[in-house]
Structures are given as C-alpha cells and as structure tokens.
Length: 270
Image 1: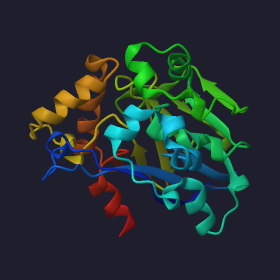
Image 2: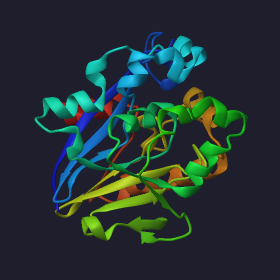
Image 3: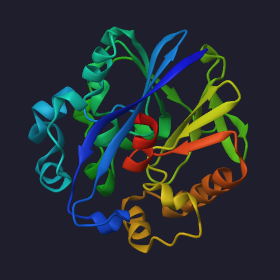
C-alpha cells in the first residue's frame, strides 16, 4: 500500500538558457524533482537526482563540460540521502529505486543507497553500457558502476494502461507502482505511475520539460528544438508527448508531472 509521497528537490541547475525553457531572463531555473514514496515494503525512491559524490567531486564524476555548462548548485542538502535523513528515515529504509532513465542528473544518487534494488528498463541500461556519441554526454556510468542490485525490466513485457502500451506492474507493490515506457528522450526512458486510492500520479522524467507542453495549443519552438537535440529518437518522443497531452486533457484521475519543471515542484511543496 502507498502511504505517502514526498516531493524532493534533488538538484538545481541554472544554465544561461532561460528562453529555451520558456522562462524569462537569462538564467534558467531547472530542478531535479524526485519522489520518495512510503509503502508497506519500505521506502521507494523515484529518480535520485545528484548524489553526495556528485556534489563533493563534481569534476571527476560529471566531467568539465557538465560542470561548466550545467551551472549545478553545489549544495549537499539537495542530495536525496540528506533529505531522507531529515525526514527521520535511515538510508537503508530505501529498499527500491525506480529510475526513469540513467542520465547523470537522474542517476547520481544511486551510489548513496547501495542496499537498494534499482529498477530500470533493460534497453536503457544496455544503452548506457555501450553509448553512442550522444550517450557519452548523457550517461556517467561511474555514478552507479559499483551498484550490485538491479532489476532489468524487459520493454516488450507489459500491458495497456489508458492509452499507453507495454506498462509493467509490480506485484510486490500490489501493482500500485507501474513502469510506463515513454521512449524517445533516451533509449529506455520510462515514466513511473503511483496509485493512491483512486488517483494516479504519473512521473514522466524527461518526456517533457515544462508543464506548458501538456497543452498542445502552446507553441514552444525553442524548447521543442532543445528537446529534439537531446532526444535519442525524437519521433518516439513526440508520439509519447501527444499521448501525455491526451491524458492531461481527458483523464481527470491522472496527475502528470515531469522531472525538471520548478513550477510543478513548487505546486507540491507549498
């Protein structure tokens, strides 16, 4: 059973590209929105943001390009492990981690929870192990190469959920946590759906960057170009974005959020 969902800010980036994200000014406000879910089976972390080692050894872990262009705020208090401890939990209480994908700003905290089982789509993990040119920029496998406990979820297995296909449920959580393939941004990108009573929260990772994108009437050309540049398969990304737009407009039982929109994070933290 799902008891409570905490919304965490596990990273903050301020690159000089605000117009690309549909924001005013020059410096963009980009957060790493993660979820901590209290369940009967212990704590579940959804994405991990930047970890302690990323903040302590940014150059070695992330490289000079990311450090220089990402403008990551070096605040250890943003790490999931410190926030979890402030909530009164022990790091070992985190039994499971679900990652939407393995980009460096989503997987950095894995190393802070060595006893947790990490659930990820198998094709995402495989892409990180043998990265193409774009993959070498997004994946920093030293963040999690020592981790021992993995559950590689096969993309072809799963069922239909609303208008989305190949969705995987987890009996361990009474199918109240689902892995929802949303390919495009990366090879094995997915969303994580969490059920509370009769409502669903669909955490979409990087399937979109701004809440404005959920309304197809909003034309965000600069942001669309940026997302195309980052996408592993932009055609798939656009197909899945249209499905999310449909859900946002026609399914009142589903609340949709992404990983980097500060507007969405503030809505849950206030």
